[in-house]
Length: 399
Length: 146
Image (cartoon, rainbow over all chains, first blue to last red; front, side):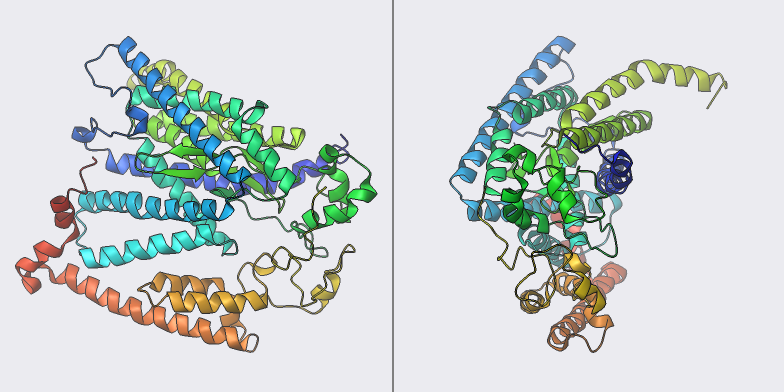
């Protein structure tokens, strides 16, 4: 491939887009950590029983041995990953049968449920914690407003970019907070299992997400699912980058390009589009990877994996937001030291994934690298670093 | 490879008033020179003027279902319409009405909420305990998660 003809330009362009995708991920993680710190500071609530599909096989209790907990967590993860696989295959089937309207309606409905139900619960918890003297009428009106406008933002294709992004981040925060309420062993094994599932689903030829991506490419459509799309960067004043244009022009230039399908999505088309040719070729429209996670109360169409949208902006599935935040939230339940380590690990993993994306130019799973790095760093800090830091501080050596 | 979709107006991102988009490269120079004002806050990534009218009207009408936040979003989204007085007469109508609706509703809601929280038990008596949110949540078992 000749997308490296202007290597400097890839770094130039990647920097701004990297920030555009790192900012919402960081905001999401920060908000989840904040919520965890505020709402879980009461030690009596730490053993809450939160029953969901992820604890269907085994619910952890403090008195079990480590091996029991591990086996139980493993069973839980198996159940969860199996249900996600089934749900994703159903999504693939629906997409194949072109039930787009149903999917969009389901997306709006699930956004409403998440924002109304989960959002309401978190607000009630916050009100309870701070004894905020708000009355129920005002509360209902505010919650109703918040949810309905959120549904509009998610459902309608042409809506204020900022507000849509804000609501998607909020949905990620709410779902992630509820996932952090799972028992501890289950959470960690689940994260690792999901990272492995993501690799399998996106990269294997039989994986559901890969099928979905290929169908979306061949039909030149967007997958109707909850996806965070960074604002497309306007590169040059004299030539406003209308990224969406290239999808239509591709059909007219296809015959003149004289290349096969896989290479059509390559630099040539983009470079012909933009006289400046500044974007070396990483801005290819690659459809998203999508998947579905089964919620305790409902299932939603989340997207995982990272790709490049039809408008050339980087798209990151909402599932990635959620599981990054779950990792960091769970780290926050131990100590803030682990939070810092896991945050840096996840950001590094995301950066690596984005670079791989610009190299491989196809939809990639965004979970595995970050989750693996995050889990490794969490256990390293918890087992090794903390002892070191505590010893040093108590002897007034450092920190 | 696939059907051409270049004549689909919704997908056409070129926000000019030209009904036949020019497929040759760089069709935007005429647009830049005309200093076109975009009706939405997203600028060239947002709506065209025709569909903007439809959106503004829909948001305005939906806002009557006790949705002042929708009116506020309407004003936020069409902020350039409020700033440039002459530009979009029909749009401006709806947006200004949304702004007025939002202000009125917020004033009323704020008045009620402040009266409730500041007045407290002295003003309302035993009804206050029945209406306040944390008691309602306890009664309905909503805060039983943690």
